[in-house]
Length: 152
Image (cartoon, rainbow, N blue to C red; front, top):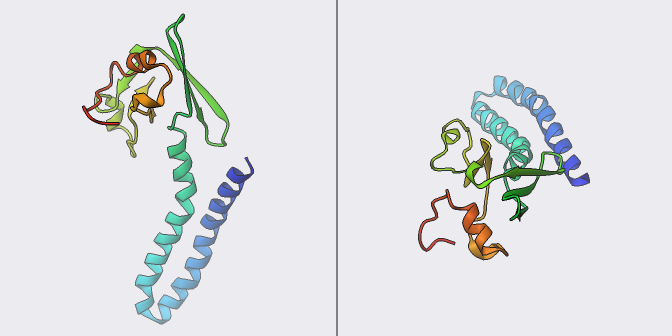
């Protein structure tokens, strides 16, 4: 939690500093026009650098940390981390799993990084059968997902 707070605060500080540094660069660019290109590149770089932790958090919340299968109720439960590193659980059945290549939600996302969609939510699911303890649960989970032959 402390690292998360540090990451978010450094992003906020970076975003606050971009306009301050930009004002100095723009003043210098008025006096010397050849600095204008440097000012534009520097502002772009500083903004992207400041937004990197937010992008990482956006991607991390899609990654499944643990997955459990209850064979009696036929319900899968995935555990993943939210934005502030709080654990979140998502419960679903096999018929809720949609291959990312077939999901209509894939066209709506700005950054479509997902292997499956569950309840319209993009998730990064490992498609390697060796990373699952229960092979039959893996086969059931990936029943609606196309796995190319020879892939891990």
